[in-house]
Length: 131
Image (cartoon, rainbow, N blue to C red; front, top):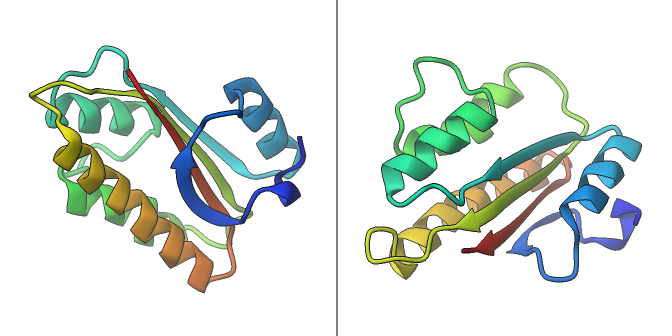
């Protein structure tokens, strides 16, 4: 599955895509592949901790949504020209401690990151699934 068939800056449910196929497509396009399995996460803090660990964020990561945005945009942008990103957030929690509103706030950060990279003509595709 080539990435050219997928809009370059989006955040969408993973649906028909398989993680292995997305990883292979990212490698073929020489883009960053960022993956986190959140099946053990129950709270916002769990989600942010697991994203930070999986994406290798710096130790000073603030573990809030603003810091997540900064790490997904400015921090990477300052590192130099980027080839593109394929991000997979697998098994987002669906429980009273991480409800629909919290999921939407998290996904909004990734939507904002997609807009940030779109302005710089860098593909940023984010896929997610729920528990």
